[in-house]
Length: 177
Image (cartoon, rainbow, N blue to C red; front, side, top):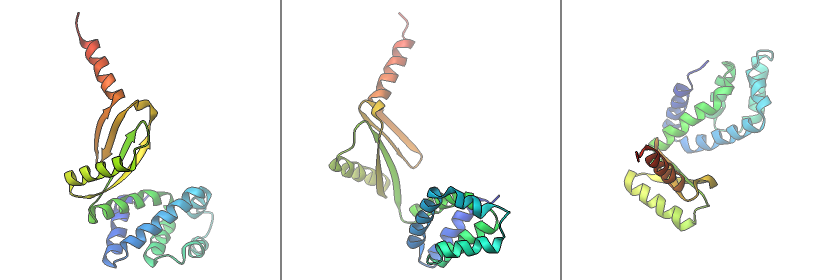
C-alpha cells in the first residue's frame, strides 16, 4: 500500500517545477473520470495475474498522449498495484494546487437552486473574508426547507431553517415548566 498523501504531494511538486501543474490537474481529472467509468480497468491494472509489462503497455495505449509526468505517475501506481489509490492521490494533488493558486472550494447547500447573482454575491463575500478566489458549488437539499449550509476549508456554517427548528426544538425540550 502506498502513501497517497505523499504521492499526491510529490506529483504536485514535480508538475509545479516543470510549470505543468494546470495541465497535469486537468489530465488527472480525465483519468479519474475514465477510472470511474471503467472500474474493471483499475482492477485489471492492479491484478498480479497480468504481467506488469502488459499492464504498462495498456497504460501507454490509453494515456500515452498525456503529459509524461502523468503517464509516469500512473505507471508507478500500476507497478505498485495501487491504481485503486489514484483518486486519493489526485485529491491531494488538487488540494496542493488549490493552496498554491489561492483557490478555495466552497459548497452552498440550499433548498432551491441559487440564482447567479446570489452565487456571485456569496463568492465575493467569501473571497473578501478569505482573500482567495472562490469556486462555489451549489448543492440542493430540499429537507433544509430554506436558508443555507455553507462548507469551505473545513468550516461548516449552518443557517438553514431546519437547523433553526432543531435548535428551537432542543431549547423547548430543555425548558422546565
